[in-house]
Image (cartoon, rainbow, N blue to C red):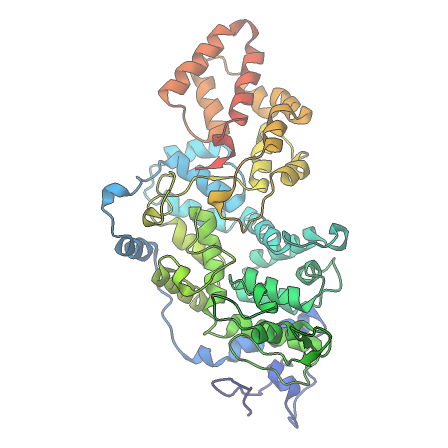
Length: 518
């Protein structure tokens, strides 16, 4: 038995059917089977699994109980506003559309929406959430989201990256029900040499530069911004310049040197040390250092940032606002409802970092199921859901449902893509997006000849046509004013009914609501 530096308890070097801890790989004079090759993904995963199974925190029994009702009670206690200040609950149609976009990336099929509205079952919302969480579309949609988060800020030539490989790999991990800790650990332990190996693309996007990897690792997976500490101590947070470079040393292929601020040509060797103080043996090979860094990041229970960053990202996507700006958490005073986010992060860790757990708790809450409205001040945050613009992949799926194919998806994702770390209140439409919806020849052709228009043109009853139009494009029934105006337009253009139907589809596709998650 031996003790890792700064480890609170000793780790036991006991073999697990050919699996050894990373610490055992560097222990002196320990008789053990041949250690796994940490140059291979399988070997790295074995080393990480040992940390997961034998860490000292495993001996402590923690509660993993936190329900949607707990969430609502906690928010009500902290917000301290009368019920009249909260938005009302959404109807079934709005709920179905919102959940569908959030979990699958696309709108619901009209026939599924109609069946859901007609279903009298009291727990149908919870059942729908479970059904969609277990579906393949959830894995694909959120793999695309996280791939975008990891690669969006990269300045690397896109030909040197394979975003599809990363997305496919993450989706497969979600399908396998892998924990978020395992997913992130494999990404950080990857050596960044082969773009066709999904996890390698994060390091490739950072050009395998230690300083870039340190900055992006903390931004994406801890939700903290320490990049400015590369040159000086952080001006308003705890991070020191030496801590930044100690973290960067984990990603160096050899010895790592920190340049002097006054004389950059003069450099001082810096040994790897994680932000919370864990230090691997200095002789540890480069590949093993990355594995060690990944283990320190995800398995140290004192690193509450890791679990909190995931919960906050999910909350931000589902409610429209985060407890803090998703990738630039400063001092803890910048956190809104700190006790709540910490409690959720704590339980998320105890639930083995199950990626679906935050979705299930949040989406079954009243907080998520409230109507959307503008939120102009922080004191009413989370009293309603913020109406937000659809992400690029969601717009692509919404349009594919109109035209009958996804051929426009690459162009749509290029035009509508925005930084997924930008606060959603700051995401605005662009002229290029409006022009695409109004004038793109392929889209205009699809509006006229696609499956939606063809289905609507077969409906002879005007009332039914109007109801189907709104249900298919906006996921709801028209209000009385909309119904009356649409019926008037149909009757006034009855001599050329097919063209009138095309016009109505075009109008709704170009509406703000079509592009919104409400």
